[in-house]
Amino acid sequence: MKNDTIDAAEGSTRRRARVAQPDLELVAVPRDESFKVWSLGYPYRTVRWHFHPEYELHLITATTGKYFVGDYIGDFTAGNLVMTGPNLPHNWVSNVPRGEQVNERCLVLQFDSGFVLRAIDAFPEFRKVTGLLEASRCGVLFTPETGAAAEPIMREMLHAQGMRRIALFVSLFGLLLQSSEPVKLASAAYRADPARYAETRINHVLAYIGKNLAHELREADLAGLAGQSVSAFSRYFRRHTGVPFVQYVNRLRINLACQLLLSGELSISEIGYQIGFNNLSNFNRQFLMLRGMSPSRWRAYQQINAASGSNAPSMASQQMAAIAATQ
Image 1 (cartoon, rainbow, N blue to C red):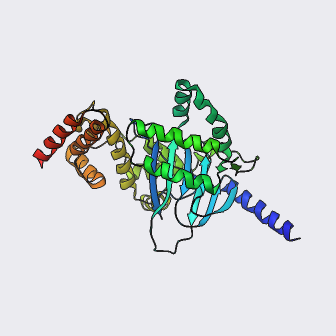
Image 2: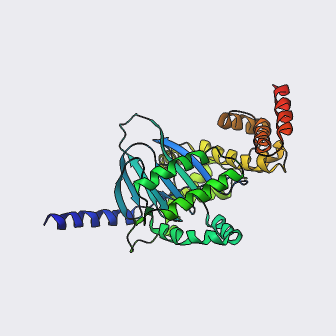
Image 3: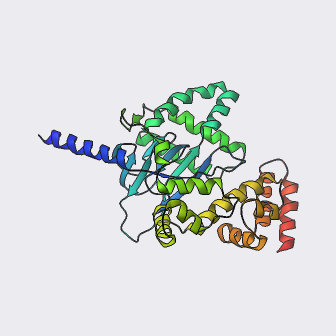
């Protein structure tokens, strides 16, 4: 009788998971990189029931709580290492008292299918990961031992540059392939449906923002797109993204600016206008607020990082001296 009750409760939970509509997360992989690695604390604006087209490897480094992958619900502790496939909804909710902040809750690695296909074309040996990637469409859980072994690799990836990042990526997936058979999480009956998710009001708005960053984006226009008053839309948008509308748009634009700055093909002013800022001073002000320095100085520092990773120490020294001369 007890088992029947548990089975009924789990079935009810899975049905609720299937009904809930996840939010779209826009993953900005830098143009000059193959994947994105980052750490985040808790609470954080992206900690919500969400999906994205990219693969994700998610390692919990602190806290305990519940995690949700497709229609699966389980408990997690530090060392919880899960891989999710494209558009599979997921979320981790920590047991943290209201008002308390955890500086680092997890490490996250995200990459798209195009990167994997290019890697397989270049290195046939990489084809061995295809089975793991296919399994991740249901979400896969690795052993705590694998999570512990993966942490130092992922932590080094946070600051690695150039070819070292690729070497660490290969090392990480070599570890995953050698580990014990991972456990599939979502049920066989669960099917991710990104087309249906995109029909929700917030995802329609976020997709529109992502496609129109270079154009003027007014909150009143987006409110009309969502069929809401401006005040209702403002509350709705902040509830789903964790930040006000203007702040969200500026973050996306500055992320795009960083990619364009790295390419070195456009001037600072050209980049500012191309990503949707109507004057250079506003672009500089927003960039300084979010990156702690001007766009020109940020580009110079990235050039120094690139030079220091090559056999060109004299170039790096000259660039550092040039920056110092402007201070």
